Length: 157
Length: 126
Image 1: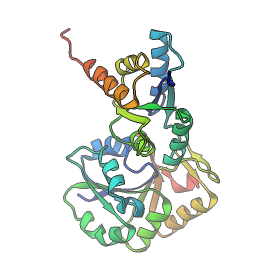
Image 2 (image 1 turned 180 degrees about the vertical axis):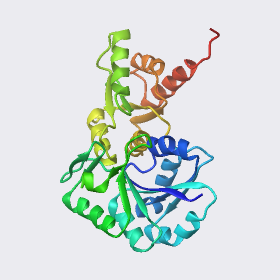
Image 3 (image 1 turned 180 degrees about the horizontal axis):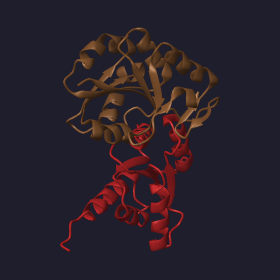
Image 4 (image 1 turned 90 degrees about the vertical axis):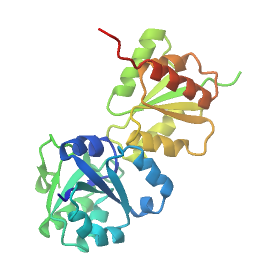
């Protein structure tokens, strides 16, 4: 198997990831890419609380994730790589040619953002950033849960 | 007499609101619980909603799941505070216990409520 999902979700590890995607994928591991969480054992414990023991959780900085991608891609289990914002996956994508698809799973309301989908709010700059990633050949769709329709980037940016 | 505890139910979708309504229907007490949904929230927005619901009062936060954004946000907010306690796996039985024991400390009310909620989970023979 491999990393089945490269997901942008500002809630990071939560029910949709662990249960919604985790069950049908028979998830074996989660890689959470976030520099702040990587530096905080307390935050890591907090995120581990929501994950059943049979799913391994790895915490990585962007730099560590760029180095670790080949190993995770070659893992015999199925994994999800999570980032809380577009910039993190864009930075990771810039350092690796392994990211072919990005799932936008949840980017919520904040000042300056406007609603694109029920679970996706973007500033114009963020929408442009997603279009730029798509122009580099990365397939980008929005999809909060597996049963929802994957929405192509052109439809929500 | 000190101020009675506030109960804040923190949930996905409309679970919190439904539980608050059910408690009011059963007990007639409609001012003990405040519902907070994580609908449409990132962690920052949910923190704001929670802080507004607590409103600086001593409180117990009743969270639906033992993991996820409702819990992580609640624990971050309660961290280091002795006047805010957190319970997970909220159910109606624990809330019914809580609303009649709001004169306890947050930690003691949370312990009682968790015990009452746990005792309500059974598999009776049909």
